[in-house]
Amino acid sequence: MINIEDLNKIQSPDKTATYIPILHKDLAELVLEEGDKHGFKIRNTDYSIAKEGNIMRGIFAFIGDDPAMDMQVGILNSYDKSKKVTIGLGSQVFICQNGMVSADYTMKRKHTGSVEDDIKYMIREGMKNLYDEYRRNIQVRNKLFEIGVSKSKYAELIGRMFIEENIITPTQLGIVKREFKESKLFPEPTAWSMYNHVTQALKFGHPANYIEQHIGLHKFMLEHFE
Image (cartoon, rainbow, N blue to C red):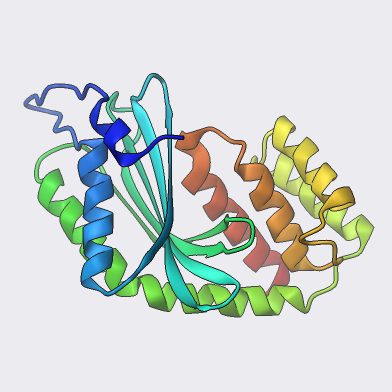
């Protein structure tokens, strides 16, 4: 398991006229510090790296006031210019740490110019909006929990996520199928169960794709069940 000190051991690139690196550890600490300023208590953190540390994904769960869900902040950073600095707000299902991320509160910034100041601003603004986004996600959960989904409808929508929308990969498709058949946490034939079957599968994706895949899923579910 990777911790925040491990992030500091990853060699960062040099600053150039056209590229300003944001250190993985600095980005993570900004989220934790801003969360503390707002009185948010951290429940857990999860860091993942790829491409020999050039890509880092961080997930921060802050304790919420709903017994089944926490507030969540996701971050993405790269040292190889492949990904913009990304901040995504949402929530996390407590029992399984499945995430919800909305495009409405996802911010991105290239590693150029005033990126250091802009990232601080993005995180400050994100934390101001985190609780409201969390409460919206709870409303989405409550609605999806009340919507039944037949086996044929489930198969149709998962197929569209895979073939049309590219939200899930072939490997993740197999995990969704297994969750549909065997999930003990979400056995009910509801839209909320389907959501969590997919987010369980998304845990096995590339760190660089975590936020975008979750945004794609959230958007897809709202479009088909609102």
